[in-house]
Image 1: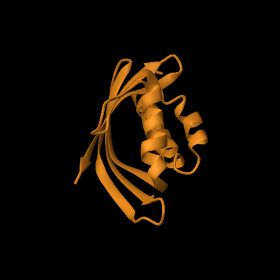
Image 2: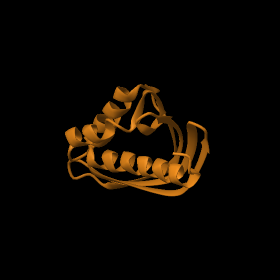
Image 3: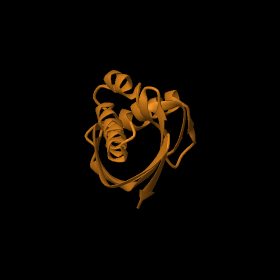
Image 4: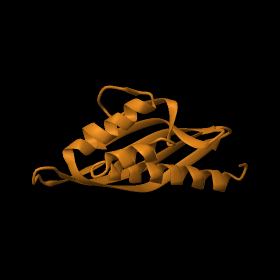
Length: 137
């Protein structure tokens, strides 16, 4: 794909699939894992403000257990995308607002922050190679 607008749309749709799978993980972790299977590169690196996550399996486990495991439901909302493509690589920045309800009758919480992502074009299409999440408190 050589069309920059088409590539940017493919990356935006990839990030939307990431959010949809993350939201699904609280209620259907096995289905979420299946959706995550074609989202990350094998050498993915994640920084969510905790221990670094190395590899696709690490990020999928984190999203399906640590995040979703404590939540009854989750809803990601992305805003203000900025996607820059450079050959077979790209970066993307997003403002994110997440609403989630804690399990066991817990409160509805709001998480606000920013994603700074790195993407790589593979033979199977764009994949997320890096995510850095910075929470705004």
